[in-house]
Image (cartoon, rainbow, N blue to C red; front, side, top):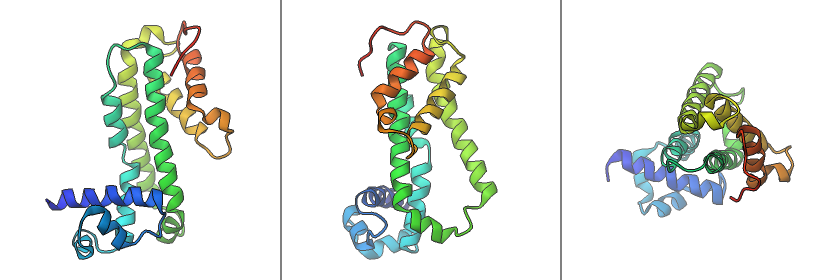
Length: 197
């Protein structure tokens, strides 16, 4: 296995273990999940802390959600497109939130005064722009059916899904079926009388 492939396998296995177990996951458990000897982990990463840092970078990387959006079928009805975008963005945000919550204490130890502000802000805007670009591209063929421009619709979907994932928001709004129905009626010029998802 090439070094880059080994690193990816370790990061992906650790991400799932963090979701299942939390930051208490051991290097032995990580090695077992990857089918590697424990010593092999430390040829790819210097320490468990470095593995967990790589997990954080991996989980906030937009590549996965961009791939999901790129694979959405073409020529489906606009309500189905909105539902698929809500599902894609919602699933990604739920995963990010779960990993970040599990690694909260680890992140505080690494950055007791908060993350490096300029670098963090720059990455956030870059990732946000990539996501908005992908969503806008998917919505562009439906411009005549939307109440607003595709880029505005994309931003509204992303912002609404993000807000619904915040802990203080009630469970009913966190229900993706309800959320999707609200977004369809807000964004589509002539929404169907009923929608199924």
